[in-house]
Image (cartoon, rainbow, N blue to C red; front, side, top):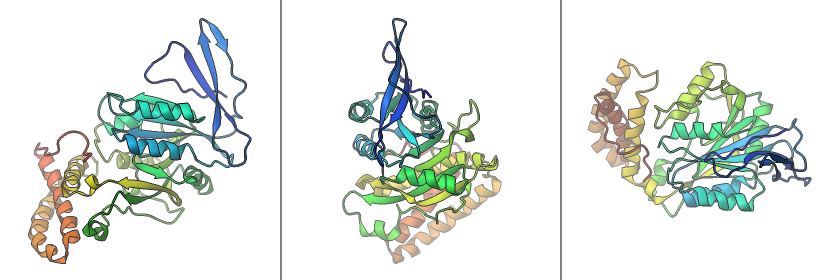
Length: 350
């Protein structure tokens, strides 16, 4: 079986197809690349390809100017244990038109036997970047992991096993924060970066879905379908889960499939949190669940939270910031509904 890994950027004169050949080592998670190239009309064959009964996973990484995090992530992805149950390759979709991630990916590609595809989505949009990654993925399964995360060695294996054991269409794993340095005490007390987690096998709803640690069957996506919709500058993952679940897809949780998320000091600043809340509020208008009643709720919420802020401040900075973030979320909704956008740019990165 041949699995295509065409270069997205079109570099090189030869057309290339790549297959995989598993190494015969217990617990090995690396593979030989078997290439078939056409040069001047001559086909050059590699030794052999893998057994087509073994499922293949395409690990998709969307990245934007997080080079040191990306390097760590690639090393972690390259060291995954498979127990011979599947093979995998990597797709890196760079959302920087200046191709800032390319040297990091090229360095990893030279050192690792894992097949790697690098591609660029020049339009700054996370949904389009996810679609670009999927378009260049060849797996029976698609896995997503964020570029600021670092997976455990059995991360992919746990996701894959849970998908089969629970007869699910997709699996979401746990993400735990890993602070760079010592954050202020109010950050820790407020648990601002602690994500919800559930028992393994728990069936999630669309509001609980996220793409930071995800595996799903490629067959979920219809032919020529754009899995993620570009009008969502954030929250594109919840929109994805809502549509997939509405058509009958089942997603379960896997507590053991762990990835750690790097939290630099810039992300525990008040300005970062508040601008992120404004953006989430603005994008929430795009969900079908938003109705006139939601506008009324946000109006009341802004008024009530604003009045409550001096009182909750007595309970500590962590309580004050929690309510201030809620205020800005609803404020973002209200402002966006009248055409006012206080968020600058597409992403809130610092």
